[in-house]
Image (cartoon, rainbow, N blue to C red):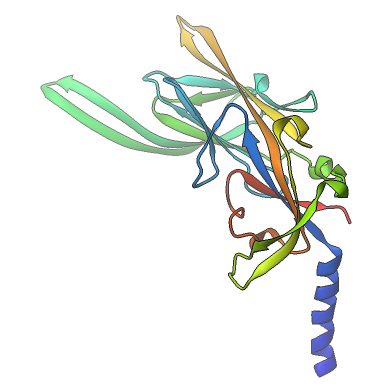
Length: 240
């Protein structure tokens, strides 16, 4: 019985030693970072746009909040993420709408009302409808981590990090980059519009992101206390 119990443990240890993981930290050249959550934010008088990349191979979580008293439309077909000058459309058929609609009625006195919205809407593939004071969320999982496997080992230095379970330090390899020398740089390009006498009035937003730090380890992302679950960090598998 003891031999049977020992074998799986040894097998797991061997598999773990053969695997390498990367925890990648992102920065932006033109988007504000929430230091507490790691979420990137762009905001003006019309919209608030949030980006998060937590997960495997940087899934793009986009949240667009309409601050106006009129609808905003998102043209996903004219919106894209761009890697190495290659554009990939955000177009999709289904999106999630969440938010609160606030209204004011003037008649016999003034009445205020609020209504919660939570629904899935099927629209033409290239258009998303965002009612006043509501938000939409979109997740795009099309980024490949292959580019990150090409980082030279000579760029990494050995260091120690505190483990998330607080049992001590973890030996890792770490590389830091500025924007000019980053191994991974991409852009998010969004096209939004409002209607003026049924004619679209377009506005575009472009946000840039790049990897500023890569940590390699034989342990999974749950071992990294500060990075795990943050919007500015994502995990990937490193080639052996």
